[in-house]
Image 1 (cartoon, rainbow, N blue to C red):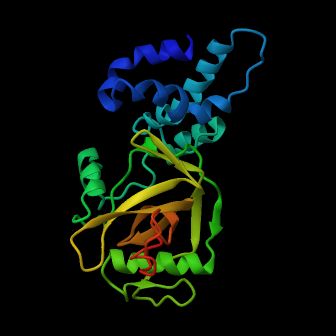
Image 2: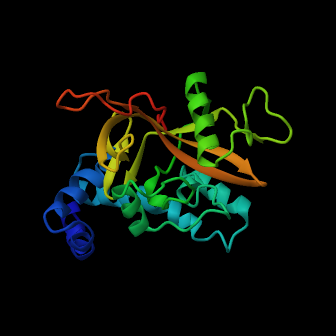
Image 3: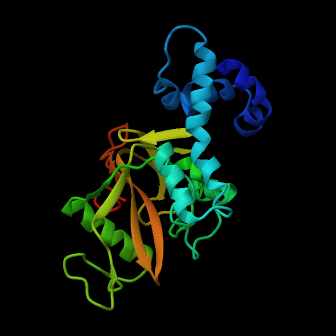
Length: 259
């Protein structure tokens, strides 16, 4: 089965989700381009069949294993993930009892309407993340300060979260260990380090919304324990451009919104 034939099997879903024009580029060249290029073939014939089999196995093996989580013991699930090189990050990624269910319509509404506050926590679909994350590393001190300030603003309490170097017993410990991700996939688009974007914000003392362009420095996940529940936050650490394309002054350059 060739890639084009596989696309034909999903034309109905693709047209419904992405429209008739964008569909062909989306499936063949964007969404799975990274997986297809990483597949090794013997180049002796039957390339399409080999590539498609390897592609399907690599894409869905993590989800297949996780579907048996209610039937096997946890150590068996961990063992299968280990030997298949598909860590269980593809599943729920530290699901939280306090998190709400992901809603695509709400996501789009918050994306387009800057009057809605986007603060909060919700589990993203497993397809957003790569199957395997990088090893945990220590975030640099400057970026850690931004991370700590984000938690304080997002949860509305300056004293609730403590610095990892001097956290008090009545504070929530914010560790300095993160897991970087090479990419995430959202609404059919893949974002990685170096990707450009536009974010909508209300300008200072104004009801007018403006698109502020920026560039992603890196993507990462951070774990924090609140009320004995481990919550996973997914971040894009970005840099904002200091001026519009027309050269005018950027109104939110110095407002500490790095995260």
